[in-house]
Image 1 (cartoon, rainbow, N blue to C red):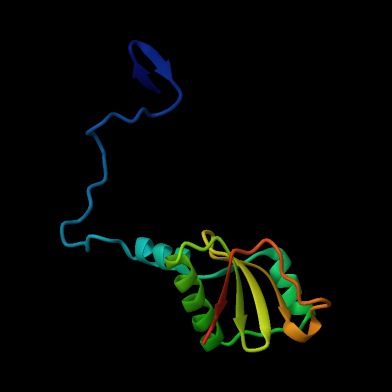
Image 2 (cartoon, rainbow, N blue to C red):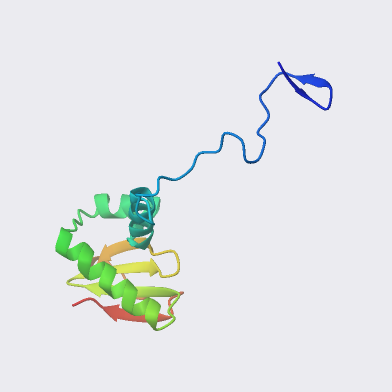
Length: 126
């Protein structure tokens, strides 16, 4: 057992400067994990509710659709939007812009009254 100030402890204490792992000098400044992590944070996410709505309404997004949605969210973010209605083709997406999270999605023709509340902006994804 290790000893700290004359007391035996059942663990190995970490002493600053001893046994620390040094970063290799030839490693790039940003790790691959950090790069991937930052990229993922920038991508659109879907809430559990939105995922259920996409499945139940048979809405499918291709890679180009996802790119268009990401671009629309980025444009809304630049304008200071918080909760946006993103119109893309015949589908409406409610997106929380600061969290980059799609809250819900529905085909426009399925909207009973086509009234959207609690939004502060509308973006047309082109």
